[in-house]
Image (cartoon, rainbow, N blue to C red; front, side, top):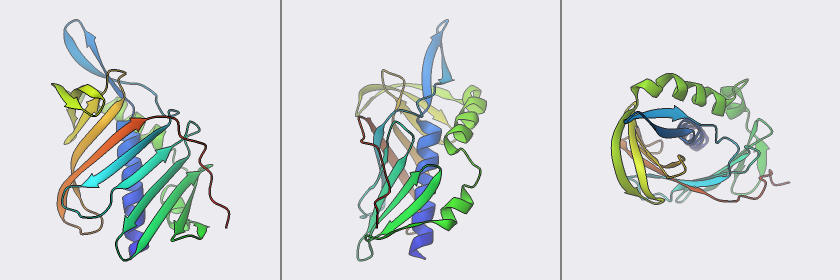
Length: 193
């Protein structure tokens, strides 16, 4: 059961970030428009928290090659690291790493970043500009789309996303907040076991 919850949380984190990381706003003749920019090769660290949870946050790292590492920890159950390297998922539960057939099957033949980039492109006309708000990157443009609120920094990159969600550990409705920091991340590799 824990593996399934962690898998759901991992795919949700990848989906939210891939969906949200590639947006930017522009001003075309006085009206703000939501446009899509490709930032899939930028390195970043993101932290996802659930408002109703005493659990430690999930942390996702992405290197410039698009490799991912997602770290989650559940009290009394330990730490899980999920890697997405060379288009394959690997799971490390409290140490040893193995290829994760469940996640690989769920994501088979899927370029997740491109898929969500395409969805963003299709949904851009539905994005509603909300104004500027304070964010971890300073002042951000805020946009609402599909029930999610996106905060874009001065470089038109996602700084924060908030959304109503179901906590994958409690199955209770809650608010999920993901904060993104763009910085150098060393190349991510699956640990050798």
